[in-house]
Image (tube, rainbow, N blue to C red; front, side, top):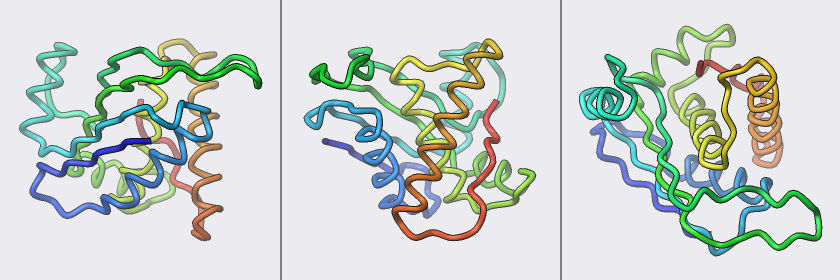
Length: 165
């Protein structure tokens, strides 16, 4: 799997953890191992510009996903996953830091960025949370992926609660 993490934010983030959790999520979702993903970390100003340009919404947001080849997880266990470009995930550490502090189970900016990375991957794979049943499916899958990754890494303590809307 080719995953590039490019930090343009000026804020120090755990790029290796972002890379690791993205790889874990894509493997768990059975995405072709030759698929490509780009993760870009930007400051609030750049994120606000993207948020206005693509969503017509004011202010910066936590994560945005820009799918390319619209890859989907295989529907059957024996089905061969397609290969291609997943797209881009854009993260904003300043928003992530605020959300981590405000979450019911307070957690660090890096933990929030890990959660947002998984959230972004799921959006690239076609998951959404507009309807209650979609939200339940996506957030349940997101929690399972984060919990599985944290267990594999030997991380202790409660997993970050979903803070993305």
